[in-house]
Image 1 (cartoon, rainbow, N blue to C red):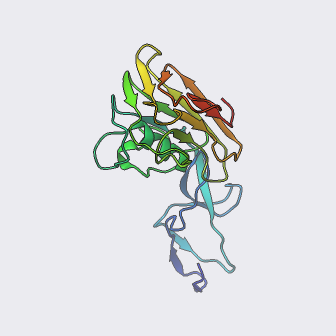
Image 2 (image 1 turned 120 degrees about the vertical axis):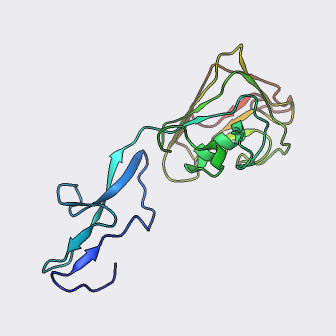
Image 3 (image 1 turned 180 degrees about the vertical axis):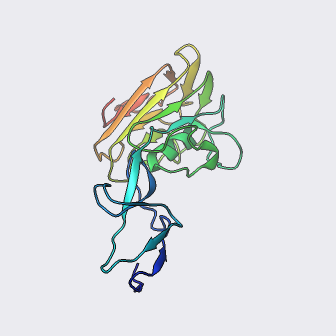
Length: 212
C-alpha cells in the first residue's frame, strides 16, 4: 500500500487482493511479524498507525489436500457448466491447482502437491481425439505441473473389476510428466487401464517420465 497515513490514524486492512498463495496452505489473514508472532489482522479490521511504517505479512494455516470426485460414467468432456466432472476435467484442475472447470471443484481440501482424484465404478472412454498434445486437452490424459511446485497425484478407482479407463485406441491412455519437468509423482490404484494406442513404443497404456 503506497498510501501515506497520518500517525495514530485508522486504516482499514485490505483483503488478499494480490491473490497470495502458498501450496498446501490456506490464507487466513495478516500478521505484523513474518513468523506470525505479532498481532493478527483480518480483512476489514481497523489498524491504528503508530509512529513508524507497518508491514503486514500473509498468514497461512495448513490445509488438507484436494479431493476431486469424478462423476460416475462421465463423458470425456471439457465443459465446466454441464454438471459432470469428467476425468479430463479433474486432471486439468489438479494440473493447474485451480478449478478451471467449476463442476470439478474439490469436495474437500485445497489444491496443493498431494491431491487425490476419486473415480467411482464405471467405464471412462477417451473420445477427444488428438495425439502429440501435452496439456491434457486431447488424446491421452496428461498429468503435469504448470507451476513451480512439485505435483503428487493419487488416482483411485473403485477396484480393478469396477473402474475401467479405456483409451479407445485414440492415443496412449496416460502420459506422466510429458514435458519432462520433473517432480511429478503419480499413483494409480483400483482401476483397469485398457484400449491404449498400439503404435506407441513408449507405452500404450502409460508413458511415464515422472515417478509412478
